[in-house]
Length: 104
Image (tube, rainbow, N blue to C red):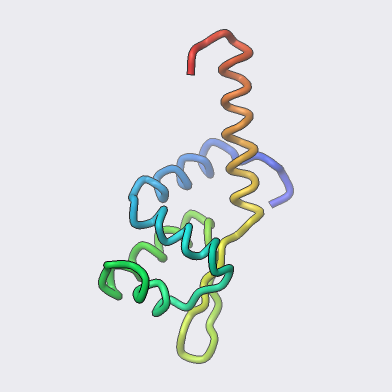
């Protein structure tokens, strides 16, 4: 990702992925641990393995996280470039709103 901002499609995809509280919790856990095996997420979340796997799939499709195989398990981590682009895009949206005199 070279552009510091997300396009509308990317932003919509990420917002949709973050629309579930469990996915936000999973993302926070991955940020805390930097790298996390799916089983570890299941240990700290009150969710079934299959549910966690489904949420991880959605986060990965939105490109918020990356996963790589380590043996028979997948190790997930946050894509910090995408998170930074999300922050920059939201900040830009807020800046545009305040510049146009519209309330947030």
